[in-house]
Image 1 (spheres, helix red, strand yellow):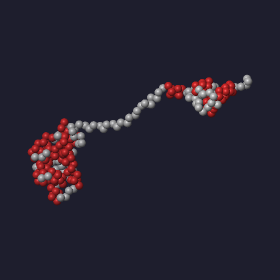
Image 2 (cartoon, rainbow, N blue to C red; image 1 turned 90 degrees about the vertical axis):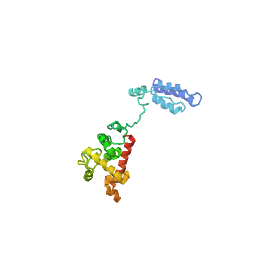
Image 3 (cartoon, rainbow, N blue to C red; image 1 turned 180 degrees about the vertical axis):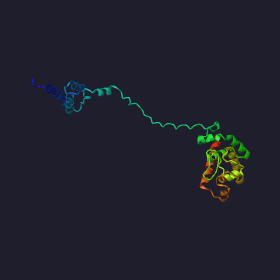
Image 4 (tube, rainbow, N blue to C red; image 1 turned 120 degrees about the horizontal axis):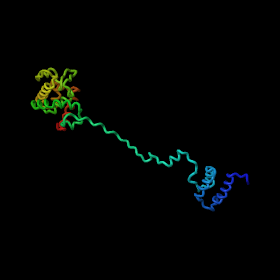
Length: 243
């Protein structure tokens, strides 16, 4: 008897308690099962024995010495458990405000070009009124032809804000096409003459870009085919903005 180990005593005690349970005489008490495991010297061994002998009584937990890290994880709540991650798209940077309040609604146009146009507003208004031309048509022509650069020169030799060819500039009384005031005067006069001559704005723009002979011959270059609707689009934006 003295040679029996504590484990042997435990097994004798355990089988004495389990045999009636297997016969269905005594209902299984989960609390007693848990108490047996907690008081045993080897909880894992006792847990395995109980699982094999009693299928209806399953201990809830195995008492064991938790590691420091495990203890902390059970005590402290997970800080990310209830965090909701929202994916947001940054708003596009707002465009700089164009020069002058009259251009506050022109978000579809380039603000730098509008800033250049604003410098010549007084000349545009004056010569447009003098030649019976819509000022926004002149602004649209300057926008498309030179982007408001008074020193612009094309590969074909067109010069200035409204890209006047040397012969056209001479016919319109312009001695220096790179002078912004003279250029606006000559370009406004020229588009006014073309509108009177052809009676339609689209034909006048065709002649302005490709020459009157191109309209007479009904030869529409690809560049002019893009030029006409582009000028009309810019003019439409300017008209809707109330500038």
